[in-house]
Length: 294
Image 1 (tube, rainbow, N blue to C red):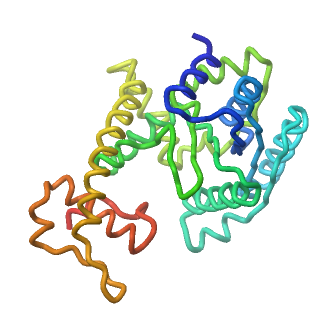
Image 2: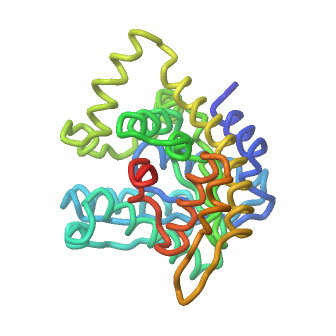
Image 3: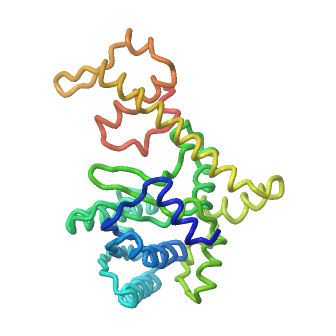
């Protein structure tokens, strides 16, 4: 099965798109996002899609970041796809957040704002199967529950927006093969080669070592993520019903009656605490399994 056929199957299997959808594609200029752009462009007539490109210049790599932006600009013009650009200083924001976390937050804020301003509901991102495997392994090493192991989802609704990841079942080497066959040269992010980042050490050192024990380790980790995602979705739905049934909100305080809480299965108790935290704080990315245990 060709890469394009695999993506077409994924789009239908996970109901990622509908006919006449407007889709904002996050394009960094790297191999994954460039592959995503080219494949969706080839499928746009079949699904009657209206495509848009969004690129955030985070200024983290100086001239290299500006060259990335220029590359995406020329690419969008070549494919005749409307594009939106923004340049920010992530290092300044890193005074509040870690640089990687700041880059991620600013990038999503830019994508969400651009989508809202242009009445676009769906945002497509280029995460692939290797990214999925790396994320699961990272969270496993750091300590994670079922939610963490579910890692990246093919489709996720955030408010009125829908995040889709059509390449999630595609291997990184398949993407490289697709680009090579099409004589398409993406940008290379030099920071991806630096071992100072945890993900890079895992990608270049640990995963190759694990492949000596099981050549299919990436597929296994990605499969684990998908199974965990389905299991967590079922538990989350059950926990949400229980949460809305027993929670008490009084004077801007959220209370969970202890007698009712303790009657619930421990798996539901964990999720109820997470739901409570999310309702009060709006973001659970800093909430760890250790916090829940305490």
